[in-house]
Image (cartoon, rainbow over all chains, first blue to last red; front, side, top):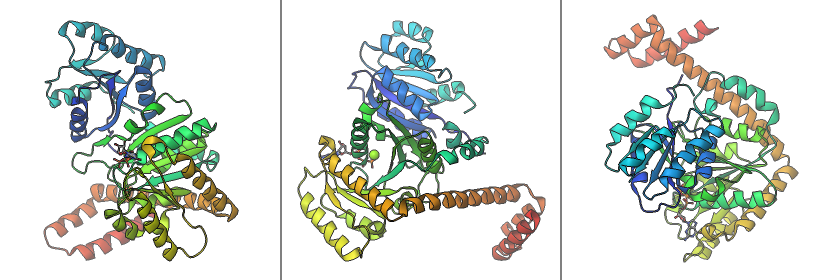
Length: 133
Length: 296
Ligand SMILES: Nc1nc2c(ncn2[C@@H]2O[C@H](COP(=O)(O)OP(=O)(O)OP(=O)(O)O)[C@@H](O)[C@H]2O)c(=O)[nH]1
Ligand SMILES: [Mg+2]
């Protein structure tokens, strides 16, 4: 039997158009052996639909602007509503320190700053991703 | 679908259960050089279908990295406004090192979408050598998407694409030379095609949704041609046989690999070959004979 491959859906949240880092991170996750589906700019409903269609293990959201506090938790909430409880949601980008506790309380597994080393992100995914397909 | 993508043990049961429900969908392969606009055109076609009251499945296949085994699957970016369209189901697949380039589970994912009642299934693959031959076996209609100023394109044509493409699309017709390219293609086809289906050459500007209707029109005509000549049914029969053969081969390979890893007699043999005490050809002949005998 084949080893399970982790599938990640990556999106820029809402209307953020400036942060190019998400593509760089996507490629680094590929180099770490993951399959990364890149969506570009999307709102929560579309991100969750795509995650369902792709059978994603992980949803990665990148954000720059001030919309993360609402849109990030919205993604988690919609996933739960659709019964996708075991999809892990992480966020990255420029997010004020003081917003992080609320995001985690809303079910975001981890929040990464723009300087985070890729190894840290990979380790977090591997530690938290569901083990059975 | 996750089950078939990850070769889950229950995959076989799932597939067996759905086989009777398959065969209805029109399976369309889109292939062509990187960046030709395959994803953009696929997205436009899917939208056109939904507008016409049909449902569509989309399968986007990109290569796995040979180094890490991971993959960057970026086709959905060009179909962004379909994410919230209930009539369209999009699945991205990585090739996962399958020889020739099509993901091992491509056929299964297509069958699942077919069984789920999708009217049309669009399968996008990067056209490099082998792949388009595989896609032409899976698909009813194969569309070759190319761009003005053939250049490398000519190579692709020589690599046997003329035989397998049913429709040619010269995309990016907003660029210079599109009509000349279309004319060149048509000439090549004139020399090459001797009766039966004559592949049409269509111009398109996928990014502006121009020509999508004409491409779909051509697809419909090809479908009528297949149905009128009995090839529609024939392709379905061939597909089932191919799936059987593929699975026999996969299972045989699996058993061989397991035996080579676990059977102590074979491991001994492997060691002797590695040490130079036995020539690899003689060893191979012995191993084959030994395995067949053991399995019957
Ligand atoms: N000028 C012009 N650009 C186009 C046209 N169609 C697509 N593009 C652009 O060409 C680029 C590649 O388009 P894709 O649809 O991603 O091409 P693709 O063949 O799917 O690419 P790969 O999957 O990477 O092989 C994008 O920037 C599109 O916006 C067109 O008709 N004219
Ligand atoms: Mg593409």
